[in-house]
Length: 277
Image 1 (cartoon, rainbow, N blue to C red):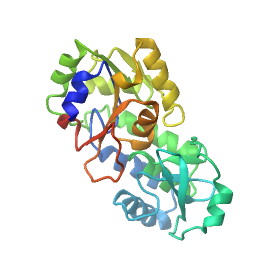
Image 2 (cartoon, rainbow, N blue to C red):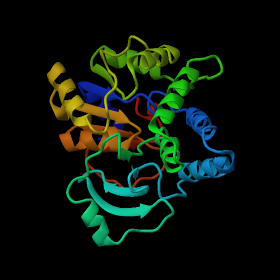
Image 3 (spheres, rainbow, N blue to C red):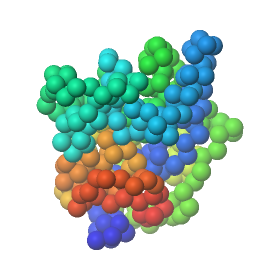
């Protein structure tokens, strides 16, 4: 069964926002530059170099990992079992197996205080900031400033070709839901900028993914009286919206331009949303 058939047969499509309905990444760099200004001058270059290494996959902390703020470490988690398989210090030293077992026994529980799922580009500047001693208040202020910048004339979102027309067509026969961690007003502004406002039957904002992904998805299924196998989760963040959906019995379309090693009968990988719709 190909991706388009999966979409055609579904009754409910649950979309992520950032990295899914738009795939720009320049705003992550903007966010990081704002944070960089808050570290001492002698650390600014190291701050940026660390972020660049993370972004390019040349650092223990990178997309797909979990950043442990308390231990300043990169945690590798099997997203389907939530078991920790490996831990490396920020400078690249691997933890002994016994230490991993002592620190992380059982399923890993994500939160937004200590164990941060690095599922997309928003979290790389955050992890860099935590390592260099900034406070969460710093990251929040810079994040909000970035969101404000994203709705100015200086920032232009790239619209996915044919997306609006595809959603208009799909909306006539399926339920379309947006499930995002972004705040409601930010979501409304971004959808207006993308010319996608009014196309979703439900906007589920401040979703607290991945901590509450399954709860939110279950509430959506219940609201529209849809069975898990009749729904598809579509997103670019495997930890946030793909693995939880597969564990619940939903089908999933993972937007990922690079090769991945995960294989699942209900998982379909596409390089861009345009390839799915």
